Length: 303
Image (cartoon, rainbow, N blue to C red):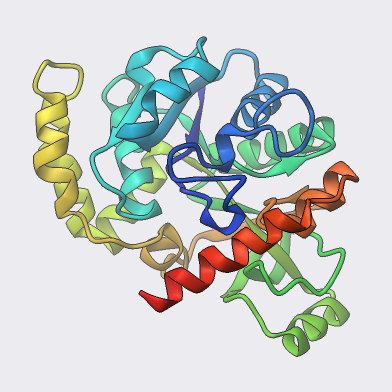
């Protein structure tokens, strides 16, 4: 059974303006100072995991040319253009229904395009274990990063009972906490950062979406007959915007009884702040860049 990797690359990265702009957001920039953009580094990690993986990218229609330029080895037909952003549940559903149109049974990994992992070798070990777990049972596995600090910018996963290896049943998902609550999570030891990486079998996620997000599943059923035909773009443009705008966390993760997490103890950052970029690169962001970000955020609030 093949592994399909879905890279979500539609975000605008406005928290890092003016380095990241709506015209060229952070996933298409070399913010880790590694000579490769963040989406290229994401692709590289999965090549190390499984060179025979089938890659898909879901992105905004405006970013398709950038994706093609930065990831030329991914077939053009595997770059899915959202006609408008509808959050991660419709994005993921689109990719999974598209995969279903070419392969009835598949192991799937869904990943953000804009995080940084300094140990891709350890990353590969964790994801391989998650794939083994989901290939043999009805299960959704999330990746939970062992916290290194009381971070308030990440969502958290509360660990339930240990099931197998490093895989735990999920007790609860927690929103981004206050400093006081984050410190309690860190002291408790039973919480992980939510990396937004998901592993499942195609059959599993289709069933879960039909149960917990039937409206989105219905839209995908309506689009599916057009896949791989000249009418696909029009069908997407007409039907995809009808999807509820909702994250996969709210649509499925917090409702399904079959959600697990695999605890990972390797360095990870979503590079969602200038401080995070400085920590990874060891370089200082110029003050004028930080001032421009503050002015940008102030202008957004004033609207």
